[in-house]
Image (cartoon, rainbow, N blue to C red; front, side, top):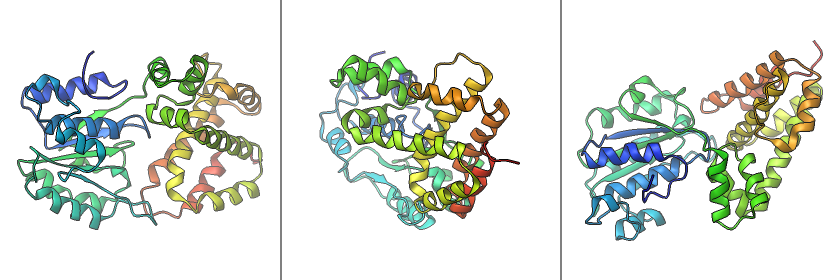
Length: 331
């Protein structure tokens, strides 16, 4: 499928949004769901460019060259509004959302639409989410709201029912591999990073550009493997350490999920290709020490904590609870 959206691996979503533009069926609120670095931000930005592109040929939008497209790409468009998480708690606070909605209600400075992108909207507590309802129920004709979240689980039904849902699945490995080779990666390097990416083009590009990303992945998986064979005291010390940086837990737990899914597959005897092929030997060794129920319990505990991080929880205590559900402790 040919398009001008600079979006990798989500052609169906681009096609869906383009049809809405062509047929003048533009919604006032969109909810883009998907794992970290899968392309939510990229799709939101490309859609914003298409909405405000001034190219005379609608089929060529976003052109990437007009003033509006360039301003959006550079992050300097006066008609684009982005949310910011609280640096201390990692929450999307009600004051932040109210301020954004006030700005969104203003007429555009120069573009066709004013567009607010609320990243990490699953970090907003229910009271903060409620601050959107007036905008969703009585939207200004020039206002577009784009919400980004890992999952819809923590979102109010009053939000999801009033938004156009776009669920981005992980991108197939060959597509990411081709993307990396187009950016100069050698075939072997592109294949390795693409497998490690878990279907996340954004992570793959960062890993290609910055070797430290791969080193951080190695350290994070080493930490998980150590945790699975260590005692309660070790795990509680780890919980205390990890609990100091709540924001860093999101990508860490996302990565751990890929490993634990691999572990479930190995325990079950599945031939499913692992997301972490460099860890095959350790995965098989761990699988010999537990059954599939143990691996599933660890995976579910990790998912549960990811879903609770946006809430006002004691992070250290929540990590301790998760680690108690991990296999390896004597009962």
